[in-house]
Length: 116
Length: 109
Image (cartoon, rainbow over all chains, first blue to last red; front, side, top):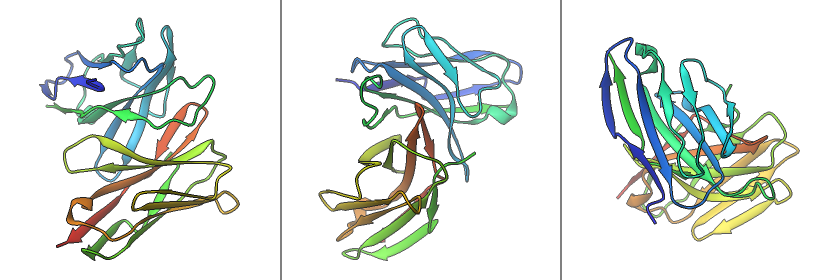
């Protein structure tokens, strides 16, 4: 099993450009989420999804869009990149949370994004 | 806002010593989890303790949870150089996992 796969690993964008960070998991996890990690701030939740067709906002959703058309994929779209979105982005998934929330999360290896 | 807050923020110990990290949180939780992050890598799940549990062990890890004080501790026994990493506590509630700012642990060989 590959687990959670994030692409690309590194990206440099110019202010105002848009892009999509890809996240795919092959564990049949219903729950998927996106975090950003900034120095001294820990990880902050951007968006999450409890299943295909369902998404919800996290702590810092502004400037980001998500969709969940399949169980496997959960792309994160930056609509108009800003320097404040320079960060490391992590995708994470977890097992079915409808019946039991007591499962750990599996994280991808991250996407390091720089907006200039 | 950050849910989990770890204390101390940085810890430097000799190989073979024990490392203890504490975490406090503010709201009701389903469970509390601890993760490890090596430099430049993703987070790895270490251990989960449910809200109705008080103590849990996994190998050299021991985690405690005191819901009355809204606090948890992670103990790593007999530390190794490979334990050098950042450690995060995270509280799970309402389909959200909220992380603290992390503890940097350096184990000196």
